[in-house]
Length: 191
Ligand code: 5GP
Image 1 (cartoon, helix red, strand yellow):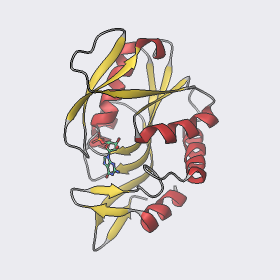
Image 2 (cartoon, protein in one colour):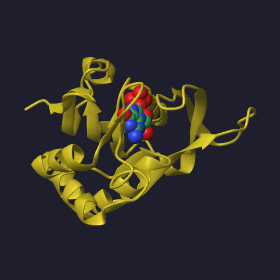
Image 3 (cartoon, helix red, strand yellow):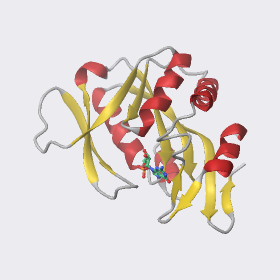
């Protein structure tokens, strides 16, 4: 998606540890006009699929998922990051290792909001090592629901997540795939 790639080139900041900061338009301050275009693009790419629900993870995925959901006309469920050690009750849970914070946490979704008849599109801001996406796909599997695919805004193609997730037969549509990034050469995208 050219508009997105141009914006990353213009406003993205490369940080130590292979972190791309897009705080000024994607995951702190949010450019809602751009989000609208992102939502339309996801709708176009998954036009062949019946989607009954969008699933994302707090916090950065929520804004993107909500705007996209206006084009799919379906509800959004976001997995909560749980601090509690003793998780009980009617929930699906899974573990995710945070790429940016380097720790493992539990994610949870109430069983009421994921049903076997659901056709789930997962939406997230980044795909790096794939832990977040794997955790979300586990919740979908445990619910007996169908995972239609994953819509990712920025995939860091030099990390292993994309290959890992696709090798499991999960359809991944990334709007911008970064092949390399460095202070000297900037961000290079896959065509
Ligand atoms: P993964 O689980 O695929 O390793 O990482 C995905 C999650 O880590 C995303 O939900 C995103 O919040 C965060 N993340 C991974 N890489 C980056 C990055 O380069 N920049 C930012 N801002 N977030 C990232």
